[in-house]
Image (tube, rainbow, N blue to C red; front, top):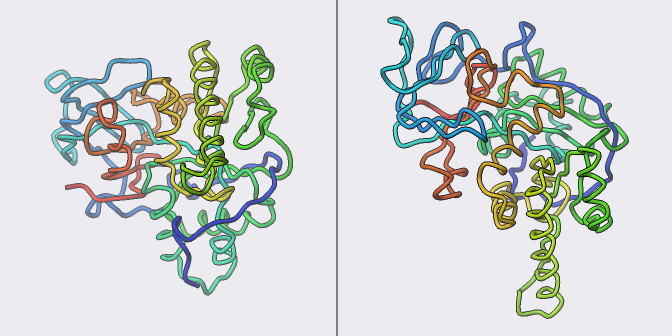
Length: 339
């Protein structure tokens, strides 16, 4: 079965309940052992020369050095301050930014992908290719499927584990809203000032999914123009929510509406004026804390090595977020090559 990429998907569904699953191998490492020109994730890897974002709230380290050993981050610092093991594999991060792996907290996987995963005759390479084109190629090491019934997604999770397929960690909902997570999108009720004040008080995690509010058509159309004006008002409301220390997680809305582009969602969130640090937190520290993966989400010693390297500095140019060089999960490559 030939699977479709993001550009060919347009479908919608209903919101369902929490379940869980993942693509871990039997030893707990990420599925898919080969990558980085044959490096299998064992031993030590040194990433040199990148702008290292250790956390959303810390000043990034220029010309940084990160040592990864057996799936975890062993050392982080400026060049000259970090001991580099003699036999470590050394790779360049020059001209790039290194961040913790991203999470997409609101999407729905392609039914064609799930159908292929359930078919034992469907090539494993097709499944891995779909993840590269739609998920890991955008820097995501973790995703939350908020719409697929658990019985439909379980064959994919089983196959990823059994065959050690390269892909993201997958959490799945099976019927109702996750506790403490409020997905908005086109639900105008969750955009009201009273609702946002309630989320702030309860310390709920707000997932804006702004791209689901984008109207189709030309901006010269009066109805489209009015919808864009409303989107602008909601972006300002989001900015005020985050400025008041509201908790926010990124959600692309992939599989729920017309837009299938996570970069577009990043741009819409950025236009709310929250700043890059808050956007990065929504992609990293907030979801891992909310979903119980507190041992990742930052580039710090002792953390699991879920990492993404992008060309450029996204603080100066947000389009850097779409120039992904490579991605690793649990210290194992799942996208891209080292050069």
